[in-house]
Length: 218
Ligand code: CO
Image 1 (tube, rainbow, N blue to C red):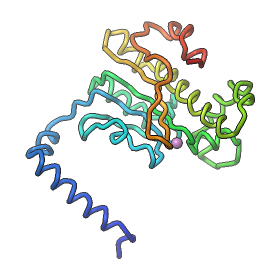
Image 2: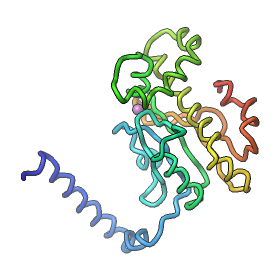
Image 3: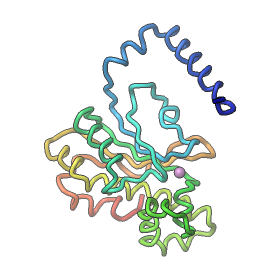
């Protein structure tokens, strides 16, 4: 069987990268192979234009990463929840970053309400966010502006969802240091915007009620 066109380039790139890292920092991989102790969990979109480590300048071993379409935290997603639990309970990350991005195709699909097959089930929560904020979104002048605002609102909803998980609540109850951050990334300029203050140490979800997250304002 012949390899798909272009795949050899990736393997060559990998060999060159590994050699360069080892040349500049001998023992880098041997050290990393023994353990990982990242301080951050990244929950981001699967979009190829939003590479987690590169955006924030972190190296292998520094960022625990979970990515899916539209950077969602589903309450029954075993994949995402397994990542979250491992990151919080075992790795004891100090920060969880939910990073959306402007122009997100998953968010666009949710806004347009088109038929997508099984993917509709995945992005259903984004449609719920859209319906909750329909009045605000309808007042925006262009579809592009509506998509971008929905990208922001979606990130804040996912942080709310994180606050509702027993994993995060139990961590806060036992006094573990864990802050949640709402970010959105601009494809056009490579810059991250923070959406309001970080959330940390809530004793109950009710505490979130009066915060920016619940109002959706920042
Ligand atoms: Co996206």
